Length: 112
Length: 117
Image (tube, rainbow over all chains, first blue to last red; front, side):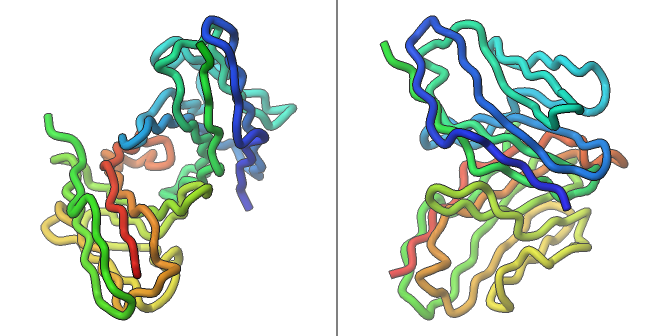
């Protein structure tokens, strides 16, 4: 069975410092992986996705993630945090079907 | 163009009453998904539609929950005899639903916050 684990429920960073949000997945097959962001009182929005092409995926707003099969990880990074990055982030795995498995989310706080 | 819309945005109901939640997907999207988001939890898959058909209803928590989609467009999620544990945000998403549906980008609505007193 497939599953996804977001290792940190809360992450705090100072503005201008790097962001690292961790995600590990469990899958018997080659998965598709996604990161979505949910700003307060707004709908979820796709940040980036991996679908078996390049392992380093670039997304919107300067975010990127690297698919590491050997580590079963898909961590989300950004070189320099901005106040507007404060939100909840969800890692999602799909086995190529309609079933998308969401992690429990990581709430990112950006300190001025 | 217009995104996914959901109505109502907020619904407060009394235990035992029935509620209907509506989702209007993006025009042309054949795939439609319902999720439930409880406080501090990830999104729980409820049901998926491809066109008007729901090939997998196994995510529905109980037989009090049902959903339909008509005309390959609007979908309604109905909860009968609501219970307090049904309180959550119900999210709808749509996608193109092409052959590689597992790689689809899902577009989410703003959700309906359901409170059962």
